[in-house]
Image 1 (cartoon, rainbow, N blue to C red):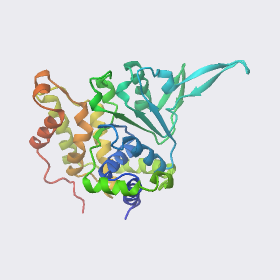
Image 2: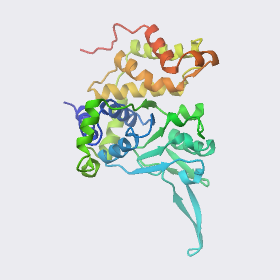
Image 3: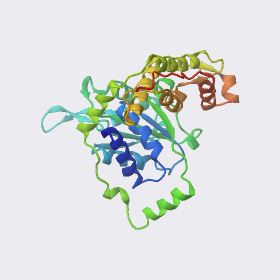
Image 4: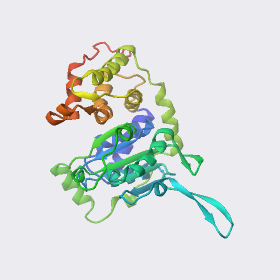
Length: 318
């Protein structure tokens, strides 16, 4: 077993000691982390979104910061400020919670657009500018944002297209099964499992893996398949705004990461097909007519069904 496969297995086991039924979500977040991407988790409150982020931070021995977004949170509360120290008689830098490895932005859609936009530079460029001074962010770095759809009409601010495009993936948490919830009750009956959690990898090893996955090959047939999906989102009569070039690159990096975690040094069509709904779905803007008749998920599934999958994927290496 290669080290990346062992890493994924250990991460699933680590998360499994704290949360049940999160194996697929853990794998997706690991793909995002290795791809240097960010994740938007969406579902009803209490489904383990915050606990998942904390568990992953502990498992990779990384720093963790959390921001609870509300309408009165200011951009400086996120990025940091320069303040005057009367004792020293000079200005001092006080970086905000963005200076971490895993940043959890809870209920991001409750913040005002001005505050939401303070994360744009952080998510895209891996740096933060405070009063004209630019600071690099720690590496590895990932923003995990949550939003609760049930409050979408109650004093929240929908994320604009530019902000949505910064997220590598949008994932819906979902409720656990009966068996998973029963196991959860027994896990939490006498203890808090996260308190006993230890790391399974160092930040240095993780950074090394981020470099390695870029060597994963994408054959021309698979590349053409990926591009065909992207073009189809732009040409669909149900879509007003299709996937951006940023989305194309995001899909490429994420399929490289999936192949890498599966122990392969090449991408197969299945990697593209599995990840497309998570990487592309939230980037679509439907026409007004289509938005009243269908959903982004259904439109993308239709595109996946209509796009020919390469039979010979060059894809399969001997």
